[in-house]
Structures are given as structure tokens and as C-alpha cells.
Amino acid sequence: MTYREGRFWQPDVTVATVVVHEGRLLMVEETVGGRLVLNQPAGHLEPDESLQDAACRETLEETGWEVRLSAFVGAYQWTAPGDEDGRPGRHYLRFAFAAEPVRQHAGRALDEGIVQALWMTPAELQAQAVRHRSPLVWQAAADFLSGRRQPLDLLQQMA
Image 1 (spheres, helix red, strand yellow):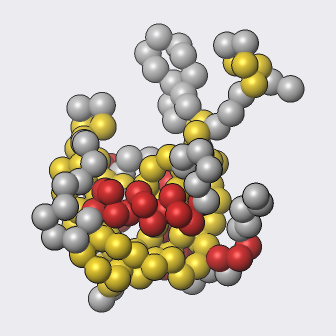
Image 2: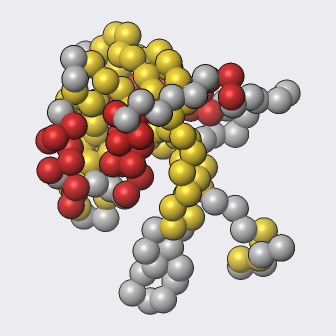
């Protein structure tokens, strides 16, 4: 077993949605570490929340869009780069879902740090690779665009 700072090591569990409408992807422009970056609607899983519920909640909080999940795209592991003081980067385990937009809640306040929600073509998103928050952004989009889909019931929450 690996220990970190006297505790069991645990990755940051996150969810993301790949929302497509009329050939465009719903993206979030946000400020992270003083940089303006692009990401899917994404965030952390909260206690007693299913992965699916977390994905819908984060999408609404970050974009103002209510969505319906249609498929599971994939699970991704990534370790962020460490800092200049030699501390290791955080480890992420991201669950990505395909989703369809249902309704926009215009005027809804977005989460802190979110500059705007925007719709981008895949080519526009790929051209902005230097601004992606992490490599997970394009990987989840590329997997979705290549047709990668699994049934939602692949993931189960036990009581």
C-alpha cells in the first residue's frame, strides 16, 4: 500500500460531460492558476453522489445547461505536473459521459472561476490545444468523436 502524508493515497475523482449540439461541443472557459483555459463541464464527485448525478450537476453549475446523459465515454487517469518546489502533481481519475442538452437556464450564475460557457467545433477546440486545462480535455472529446460509447448501466452505485 502506498501512503502519502501519513494517509492512504487517493486520487481526485472527477466527472466530465461531452455535450454536442449541431456539431459543436459545449466547453467551459475558466481561470485556473492565473491562466484562461478550456475544459469540458467537469468537477469533483461529492460524497453520497452517483457519478451520473455529479456529471449533470457540474454541467448545470458550470454552463447553465441542463443535460441528459446518453452514454459513458470512458475513464481516464492523469497525473498533473508537480510544482517548482518538487511536490508531486495531483492524480486524477476522470469519468467522462456523453450528454445531450435539454434546457438552458439563461441568467443562472456560473461557478466561481468560470468566465463563460461556449460552443466550439471540434476543429476550434483542437486548434486551442495549448489552452486545454489538461490532456483529458481532447482525449475525451476525441474518444466521443470516434464513436466510443458504453451503456450508462456499465457504472453502478451500490447503496
